[in-house]
Amino acid sequence: MSMPASPLLRSALAAVWIAAIGTPGCANHDPVARGQVSAFDTTLEITLIGVNRERAREVSDILQADMRQLESAWHAWQPGPLSRMNALFNAGAEPFAAPPSVLPLLRLSTQLEAQSEGFFNPAIGHLFRAWGFQGRPAECLQPPATDLIQQAVAARPSMQDINIDGFRLSSKNHWVKLDFRGIQLGYAIDQAIARLQDLGINNASISADGNLRAIGSRDGHPWSVAVHGPAGRGILATLEILGNEAAFTADPDESSFAWEGETYHDIIDPRSGYPATGTTSVTVLHASASTADAAATALFVAGPADWHRVAKLMGIRYVMLTDAAGRIHMNPAMQARVKLRALNREVIISQPLT
Image (tube, rainbow, N blue to C red):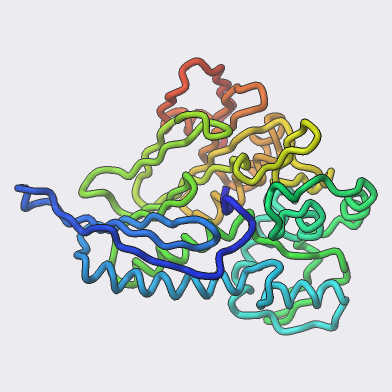
């Protein structure tokens, strides 16, 4: 998923370039620069092809500054543009100017929520807050009171409740509280890739938490990403990334907590107000990391019975879903792309998505 391993965003951002190397004795091979940028409480692994160490350090400074701005703008509960927006929505304020740093993400999220029929819904921040996923460590969490969940669900907050009039926003639903955890990592990686392209870098990858967006190739070879099994149990499959493409997986194990023998995670089903059930992981391939991130969340909530219909609504062509019984569901196009490593799993092939 497109989400961070923890909902708490780091206040500091560091960038370290580990190496810039060539292939010994092979003059035709381009140098490879590998670096790390810490953002959104995770580590973005960056690989640049054909870039020397000095240039890689310059690029890292640019990406560091970009990511710091995005973190500050999209933080759902610490002081910043998004938290101020949420306060104005909650107060039922008159239309107010949308922060330029948030408006593009807001527009895209509104579109993706509509396409997913609300299975992806960043407007349910009150539910995330009730569950404690906005800044509290897992050992301090427990399920919220039932009446609070029922009240939040009954209010049915939605991105469609937000009136966007040019650059001005308003909402009559005071329960709208934005939390972009289901898309912000993918969107940030898309912005970073766009920045690399603006800088003339056309062969690169950025990965985080098992998710990857790539452009070009790795010295003429396709990029690849390993898809881990639910709860991090080994490698479930590997995927080759062809050209400009992203692979994102919704696997909430790292954000879960245990309470009285039950495990709860932070992929909330807006219909019930409780963590979605029936699914343990979803992987989506798409040209946009933002869309792949949001779609993985939406299909996780839709579950084994409804993922195919929702994927078609969202225009998704490649999906692999693991259900609570350990069965793997995928469409034929994904079957042709994926190399399964867990050969003891039952595999269910759906009808085509196109």
